[in-house]
Amino acid sequence: MKTPFASLLAFASAALVSLVSSTACAANDYQIFVSNEHGGTLTVINGADLSVAATFPVGKRPRGVHCTPDGKTLFVALSGTPIEAPPKLDANGNPIFQKGHDDDDDDAAKSDKQADGIGIIDIAEHKFLRKLPAGSDPENFAVSSDGKRLYISNEDVGAATVLNVDTGKIEHLVIVSKEPEGVGVTPDGKEFWVTCETAGVIYAIDAATGREITHFGVHPRPRSVDFTPDGARAFIPSESVGELNMIDAVNHKVLQVIALPKGSRPMCVKVTPDGNKVYVSAGRAGVVCVVDARSGEVLPSIKVGARPWGIAITPDGQRMFVANGPSNDISVVDLASAKEIARVKSPGSPWGIAIVPR
Image (cartoon, rainbow, N blue to C red; front, side, top):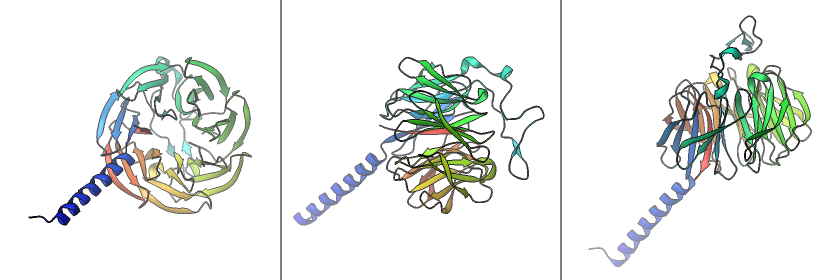
């Protein structure tokens, strides 16, 4: 027979377990949306238990995927341009293109331009609603700070599109350099940056007018851009040479060129919510590189799946999700221990990741 003290202790223990459990669930109360480039689908993963909630079709070649700041609307970039294998590399790590081609874009005659656009997704119902015009071959994009505009890279035409979400109309078409891919908005919402792969040119564009503010160069194939929360620094990888560029985001100048571990093919870059660290998916190296955001010191890398591309960090900075294309899965990384703790299947060559609070 339990004494009153023992019963009280048992009740308190049960209440504590319940509180810890509910706190853990609350901390992971989000959904992870993954674009599967070959599969033409989105996979939805529950943050609480890492189970797959849904997989549903959205259109051809989904790549960039992002939600509005309020977490109510999800967008995905769709393209009818056929997929090509990654180019072979020379001894210096630069891509080798076929004779007659100066980049790895596909023949426009093979492209299905009717498939191009930005898809709108019903987050609650996990289904595709409709498609907005977004210029030719939209690859990636960023969402304005108020969620009303999308800044889109149009890879095969060397341009960037500013799309008004409410009207569905294109407000500006900005000519940039060849193969624009990465797009990011400065934390104050005043500028969006576009990274152009072929020549390594970065464009800073006025978000209100669509006019170019300036452009500057880094080594070839800059694939993405992200900013520290205070807007003082930007980080841009140069895939061909295995570098990460630290940029003065106010004055648009390269501050430091950071050599990443040998074999790194840096692609997607993300800064932690506290601004202390930078994570870079290293492509063919099969790791995520880690860099101190202030000093530029390269920290030990994190082993993940095959050819990681898209990465996303939870708002609390506790976990990172990594899209591994060839291995058709998502690595779940505990950032405190800097270790992969789980893999979740996402068939169809996962490319981009967006974390959406419930």
